[in-house]
Amino acid sequence: MSLFEHLAVLLALVLAAGFLSLTEISLAGARKIKLKLLAQAGDERAQKVMVLQAPSAEFFAVSQLGLNAIAILGGILGEGAMRPFFLDWLSVVYSGPGRENVAFVLSFVFVTTLFVLFSDLMPKRLAMIAPETTAMAVIRPVLLIIRIFKPFSWALNLVANMLFRLFGVNMTREDRITFDEISAVVEAGAQAGVLQKQEQHFIENVFELESRTVTSTMTTRENVVFFNLSEPEDSIRQKIAQHALSKFPVCDGVIDRVIGYVDTRDLLVRLLNNQSQFQLNESSIRTVLMIPDTLTLSELLDRFRATKETFAIIINEYALVVGVITLSDIMVTVMGRWGSPLEADQQALQRDDGSWLIDGSTPVADMKRVLELESLPEEEHYETAAGFMMFMLRKVPKPTDSVEYQGMRFEVLDVDHYRIDQLLVKRLERGAASPPQDTPAVAQRM
Image (cartoon, rainbow, N blue to C red):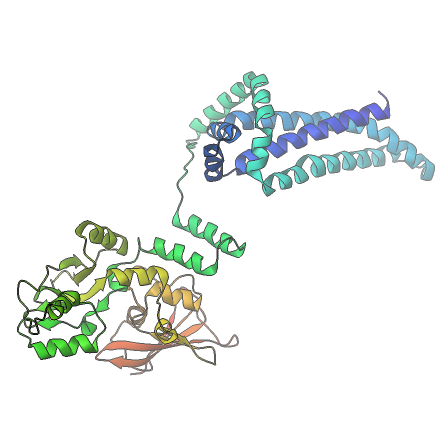
């Protein structure tokens, strides 16, 4: 064979290997979710790709058989064709010993570079740009190749499966999608400009409903405004006027003896019907939904949907009231606070020096988002910023008590009846010594 014929055969082998590399990466990288959407839109090629992906071992056996055979054949032909050429070229400039070895090395480098560049690197990079489109474009010739080489692939897979069983390797592919994977996709969409930053927060907050308990969003016990069963009308009117609330619990003397709740719309109807006086009785008190403090926000949404209620009392294992929660509280968790800028930023305020004032009732998830922290130690033990400090301090906090974690200092600013009202969070200077992230430092002033 002439040099031209050798080069033509070598070029054909390179293109064949490049095609196999292209199809291998595109079939492995094609996402099932996108393929399902394309199949539902009527593209039968997408359905064929999904069918081939399920028993993918059959195609990969053919692909590896072809790639290895082509590589070996290309090396034999390439070395035989290119070594005489390089030898003649070397004879012009060098006629000493070792020309054969140098010509062999040059032919080897040339053929290897040719295959790596055009049969491996470039096809795989092209396939990763649009794996679904590429997979659908090559699916028909791929199915034909599998049919031709089916006996060889069957024999190879038989041996491979025997070896896998011998070593106890589980070959079942899991297609479960975790929250972390969805969060990563959403973040990638936000970075690419497909999703706005606000939309990204909405999606992440919806998934947080599964992990956040009702205590992270509730109105705490000390802030609950309630009516006594024997409360006079003037006191009821005053509480309604002072507090912009639509529902008030009704208790028999103390907050832990809940009887029901009153909807202010019912009282408004009485006033519109010229009933100037109203009392708390069976006709005005509604049955209240009582829920445990271990319930998640997602489970509470199901309860609200089933009972057609939008208001609930939260109790702990000792049947003591720990707070109240409404449907609006859950919506605030998803969408963020609305209203005036002061109301929207009341839980986390950034000062001019870059430090943060964090309200003690701020949910852990919101505090992490504001401070750009990926995690906090043992988050399952607390729900709020105040809970984080109490967990880290291991005592009832006092003003000026502080904790250092991940290059930040969390300091207690204000305590009201053993309850942390506000934290000051400062980022430590780089020159300052900071402990490892998994062993936070605690500074306490007795």
